[in-house]
Image 1 (spheres, one colour):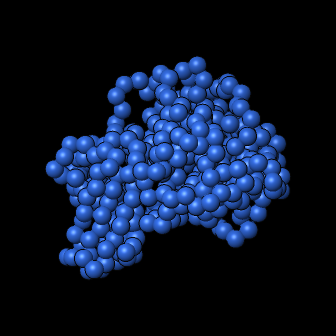
Image 2: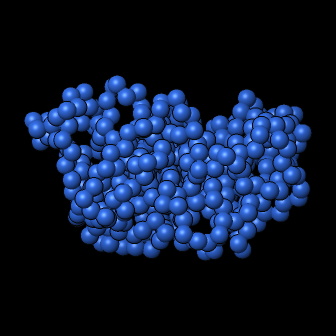
Image 3: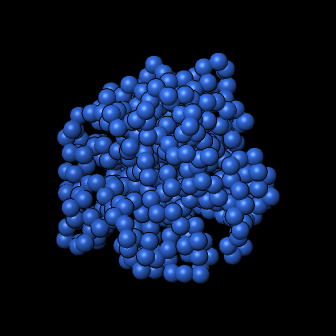
Length: 413
């Protein structure tokens, strides 16, 4: 069981309502099992010149419509990844962050490593790759997704167990989940992405400037308080991993309201007091002040290209669930996607009394592997106050976990 006051591990509620990626950055070291290697506060990095390869263009920002933030206080603006297969070694923290992005997705018959790009906003996640709409339709046919009309030139699909929708055309899936996105809106995302409405960077000078500066990277986050070097004066920031010719780089960028607020000494002082903002794997760190922009660039040792910790590479699975109030039973089903070691697929019951604790119990104790089509039933007759049930990824004898799927207990009959 994970105690509720253990700040080194995420609770269930830190992953609800699309908060997994946001929570992930601050918790990444704990998730990667590296807390023992954290440097002491106020320790100084090794400063030096770090030359970083040029980024690609920020084409991902076209998927974020203007006005998305008019009725939300959500801090994160956009995340972007170029998943692809691993070509050689990569930094340990990159692997862990990548795993967190992968676990948030349903499976559409494409495979995460085959995506050309993945863009996630608070409205939707956009997958771009080489596939046909028929490829995705054949996968969705074996799941709880059902055809739900069309929008522009996209075929729509929807399901109600945990509200999810997908818009599909050749080469693009736009997906929204009530569990993963705070303000799901497929139509607004499509309109912006194809130029039918204004895009956010056209109305936000700060967002346009930061995304111009950081461009595209292998893995990128843009948000209001991350990196948190000088959050009191920062308008917006970006946190990115860039990989080129077997060399990895971690970049932190902040844009301030005034150039007078910016100096290399100020950034170095903030970095030395808040070392968690930069990966603990960083070896050589370069700090630059240029007008309103502070940029921290670190060269990062790569991780041996060997077998990876399963916790850093969770499976991509579409989960389905059904609650029967009369019998107080829940049926959980692996509908599509990768197979997983059954020893790592557990469940946890959410009750008002648990205060966000996670207690893992085996979900398929009598088999070795969980694959598409596997189904199991959980009896909740001894849990009268249960409000939800979650599929949890992680070994039973370890406090680490990933929250793969949560089903609210509403009668689906």
